[in-house]
Length: 140
Image (tube, rainbow, N blue to C red; front, side):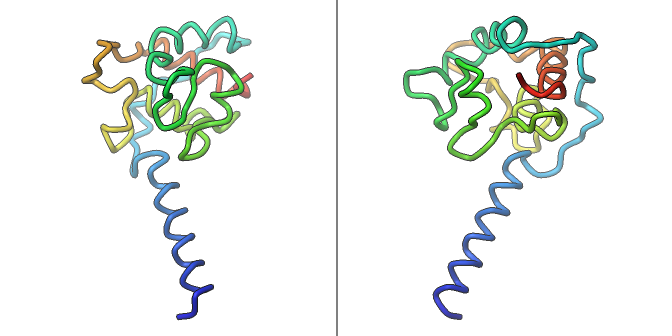
C-alpha cells in the first residue's frame, strides 16, 4: 500500500470513529424527550440560562473541556475539538441533545457527568425538551 492510500485509509477510519463517537454508537431515540412546544425558543432567553447553570462551569472561557465553550451562541454552534455538537434543525441528530438527554451509548458522553466536582445535576426533561426545540428550530 502506498503512502497516499495508507493516509486515505487512516483518515477514513478516523472520520468513522469520530462520527460514531458523536452519538456514542447506538442510541435509543425512544428515550429522547419530545421537543418543547414553545416557539420561538431563543438562545438568549431560553437556552443560555440552562447552559450557565449546568454547562459553563466546565465549558466556559477558562480551560474549556474538549475545547468546547458553552458561554455564547457562536461558541456552541462552532462545536468542540471533536466537531459540531449541534445539527441545526435536527435535535435528534445533535450530539448536544443526545448528551444532555443522557441517552448516548457511552456514559462518558452524558452531560453533565454524574460524578462531577461541581455537583451539577442532570438536566430535567423540560430542559432537554427546550434544548431539543431550540435545535429543531434552527439553533438561533
